[in-house]
Image (tube, rainbow, N blue to C red):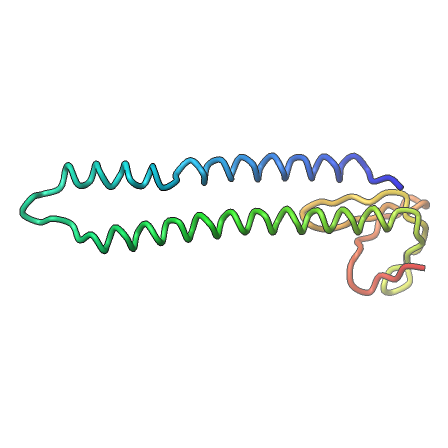
Length: 135
């Protein structure tokens, strides 16, 4: 079974983008937050000191957001992997559109923008989704 190179390239590009985003998120970690905290404390007005609970709350919020971003990136990666696995299983199978107007054997599958697009042996293209039947 084969999948077109476009699917592989899309996965590679998606993985590259995700790793770049992860690096940006990881660049601002707890040590970065502590550096900002120390700079703020050194430059604050002694007659109006900042509230330490505010800093703890902001730190907790920052780490929560950081973890949410990383979790979303992992989920996106898993969904892409799942779509590619489904695509590889579809190649070579016969498919029919929901209305029955398009049918044929799948020769290639392309993943683009989270949508699986099948190329059939007759040159027709069919989006794999609800209502499409495999025979």
